[in-house]
Length: 465
Image (cartoon, rainbow, N blue to C red):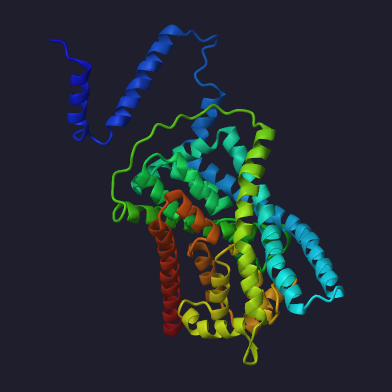
């Protein structure tokens, strides 16, 4: 008797749980092999070429060794372009925005507006927004178009292909590599990009670990430390390459933590098997400039910048209040930094650094100017000394920074909690306070654990030597 469709479905359901994990891959391979056999029989090629151009390129960019080297090289070039180019445009944008702030402040003074209203608006809220825009917009306007260019060219699916086996070993999904790449521009955008992952469990892993790749808001801190402490003995283009190399090293540490935490989550609170997926490598194509500009600037840069401004404005108000409320011989900011100093020393940091990160929860871009404000005793956020040598003198000679402080600050900047914009985005994407809180606990706990171990080892070695 011939089986009915219902019989076939019932038999398939009965066998579903007993199938091996690679069954889906075998089915897909079988389908593609059959399709290829039919195509060879039905289609006659004009030229008997063994490989076309796309296949020749793919044999290079998807090979185990050359593929990873090319990927690393492209990442270095994109970061170097972002670092070198953003500095120029940030200075130009800052000059315009800060100049407008000075003009508006002078106008308020001429009108006789009370000093605390003028200071709160222009030295607090506006100055913080000006910092965020001038520091955040230029790198995003460079990084996102470069990222979108690679995406439009058809290269990013090759990145997912190259990294798929690593994510599979970590119990995660291969498409997480794409969301991780997006996180380099902005972690909030990386969290939104996890919508491409169908499995809820693997999507949650991608969301909780996206913060381990540094967004452009953390790059100013990393660049300052790399320039002042790592590339201090070099000059010119060599110094910028050395600094970029140091930043790439920190990025690779972040990628390693992404794999480690994905592996840990997939074997504990998010236990389960990595799901298979069919990744079709699209043909390489000529990039569409207008589409790249619209996607990178409107859909990504402006969207993320607006969210950052919404969270940065209250931070500017808090910073100004802390710096202008007297407390003892100084102000409330200096007093709180003093209270936190003993706790910060345990992790190789100090109270000013911890307070700067507490204040900068809404936006990581204001960490450096907030630290400089407190180290120089200013009442508003300041850029700090104008040269690497002067910054080094301020930090090392006047405030006791050591190489351990710089190393641990780089690690803390890499691993600490997501910014307010990203936490809000995680809540909106998961609709869960639990997972939004978990993203903070995981990252902040890892940052304190790693810096504590590093500081303890450094002190032990110093004691033995």
